[in-house]
Amino acid sequence: MRVLLFYGPEFWFRTHSKVIESAPDDDRECRVENAVVAFVHAEPKDEGDASGVETRLVKNVKWLAGKFGSKSAVLHYFSHLGSELAPPEFTRGVLDRAAERLRSVGFRVETTPFGHFCEWRLSVVGESLGKVWKEL
Image (cartoon, rainbow, N blue to C red; front, side, top):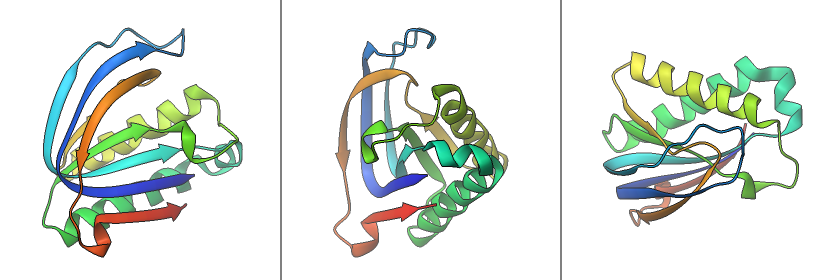
């Protein structure tokens, strides 16, 4: 799994178009403030360690949020971080379970519409930790 984490004062998104036919319709718009925004890319090899990559994703989001005193996160499926893609059902499951785990410890979590392209705006803090790349 590859994850590009940002800490930003603002993240806004709006559904643009559906790209995975089996994905449910999900037209919405949302704005989140002072949040870790995780761009997540799952790879086929992650299927052999679903629980592990999920745990590492949650830990990294919590770690970065803690650096900024935040309890907010956005999980965004971003297939552009690698050339090999895990099946959509697997990736969606990891994101859904990670979101629930974060919520269970008091995070406000938004997930962008899975299987859709989104229009988005992201402002990012200037500190070095405002931008973090991880291979989990």
